[in-house]
Amino acid sequence: MVRTRFQHFFKAILLLAFDLFFIKLHTTGDISKYINPKYENMSFLAIWIFTLLFLIQLFRIWENNRDEHAYCPPGCNHDHGDSASVPRKLVNYSIILFPLVTGFALSPTVLDASIAANKGTVLPQSNSNSYDEDLLEYEFGDEEEIVNDNFLSNQEYDDKMKNLEQTEFIEMKEDIFASYYEFISDTPEKFQGKKIKVQGFVYKEEGMKGNQLVLSRFLITHCIADASIIGLMAEFEQATEYPEDTWLELEGTLDVMNYNGVKIPVIKAVKWTVIEEPASPYIYPVLTKIL
Image (tube, rainbow, N blue to C red; front, side):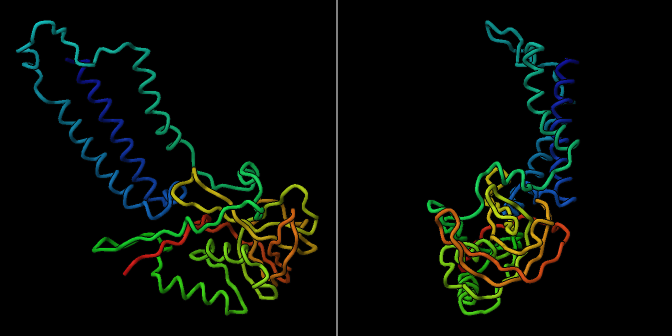
């Protein structure tokens, strides 16, 4: 009975640890480094579930087990899963403990240019996919406040996209970055000669000229595992002075160039400033809501 109660106690500690880990992610804001903010309500739900399971497990530690074997059918060996071999238990608990240990011991890091290099080319290719698949629709009822700033009504989204075509100065704000990037990349000739302002980290592909770099951002659809990188080419003589992962705010004029057999937009930079990495460095696809 002592061994059984110890195992119940250990399981309760594990549940409490997961509960505290999720609470830590929310209180520090690090949760946004793992998942799209639209899923934060689900992670809040996980906190309540872990709390409930912890309380249930806590009760099981102290429940009266004196009569648990009072009625034992023929063939009963009094083994209810608590007598697994030591190696098996070590493997099982190691699998559970690993994310807890790494989660508490290691600080989450932001994706950078080295990850971008592993994911391949950043600039559009002839066989690149459109980001239309990331434009999702979400029907609203009487839900709680939405945590993702990227929710727009259909009208708001249409107005922003119409403004993109009509304006002479394009500001690549985070809430519309992915959609603007797709439209500009698909039809660069439409935006030739327009002014643009963009923030991103420096990434340099193999084969680029010394005066070229890509101002890049990581696009998170669901969680960090599905991150993709997007960015705009920029040209200015001082580009060699800025190493990869440097965050820049850059202004210039859009032009069109041929890169690897594909027409792409390029920013002829006239003004740039080194900036701090944003508190939320990732961008998210636009989600439209039906009102």
